[in-house]
Every structure is written in C-alpha cells, then in structure tokens.
Amino acid sequence: MLPELDPLLHSQLRLQIISLLIGLDSAEFNYILETTGATRGNVSVQLNKLKEAGYIKVKKSFGESYPITTCSITAKGIKAFEDYVKAINIYLGSAKNKEE
Image (cartoon, rainbow, N blue to C red; front, side):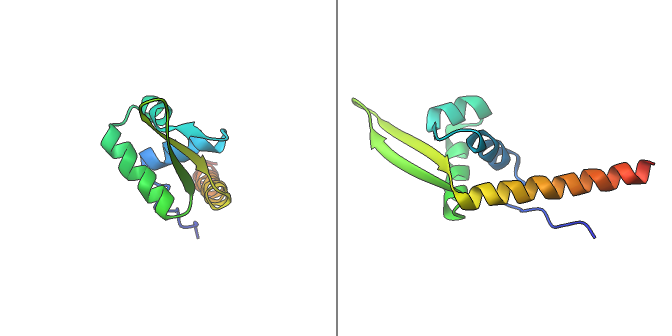
C-alpha cells in the first residue's frame, strides 16, 4: 500500500515555499514572492497555512520605512518535508517496478 501524501505539502505553492526554505536559514517575503511567481495574496495565504501547521516560523519587523516579513522552516517542517519526499520516492519506485 502506498503512503498517504501530506495534503498540506501536496499543494504546488506550499511545496515550492517549503522547498525554498529547506535550503535556507530564512527568506524574506519578497524573495519567496519573486521566486515562486505567485501573487502577493496567494503567498500570504499559503504562508499562514504553513505557519498554522507549525511548518514555518514567520517573523515581522520593520526596515527603514517598510515592514519586513522573514520566514524560516521549523524542525516540524523539515520532518514533514523529508517524509513527503520519502513518500514520493515510494510512489516513483512503485511506478518504476510496474514498468519492469
């Protein structure tokens, strides 16, 4: 039986965000926005969903005259991402075995 995929990470934009953060100490909102190509509102909504799940931390501060939102992945987020990748690899292995 194939493992269940984390529905929170199975969303393309949330997976993009987690994939970005997994390799960084932190990332500012504008970097995430530019890298994903998503709209400001959509990125904001998806960050909130990841934050509510405990997968990321969001820190809000102020620059000279503008707000700065910085995101970082949590230990729970790292574990969820690793589990998701393992599950996807099982799916891919299952498909490969059917071809042979």
